[in-house]
Figure 1 (cartoon, rainbow, N blue to C red):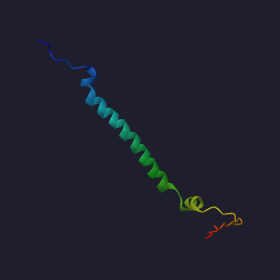
Figure 2 (figure 1 turned 90 degrees about the vertical axis):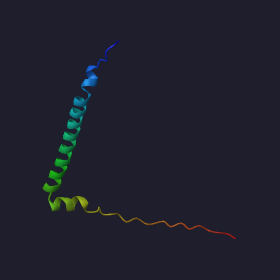
Figure 3 (figure 1 turned 30 degrees about the vertical axis):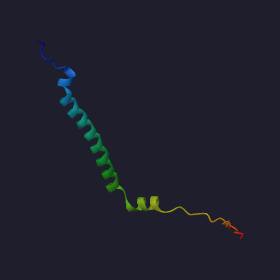
Figure 4 (figure 1 turned 45 degrees about the horizontal axis):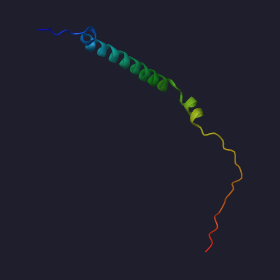
Length: 70
């Protein structure tokens, strides 16, 4: 009778999974913390300059109407 053997990759599967998840969570936490840092650090004056609408140039408007014949 043959004994069951486990492959190295199969035995390391839980360790590799948790190492991969640790790296993913670490990258997400860096992204989230940096975005929170920059949002708290920004001044309201800079935000007002960015969010102010650009001046629109007024151009003549063409209006076309449809003619319905009976």
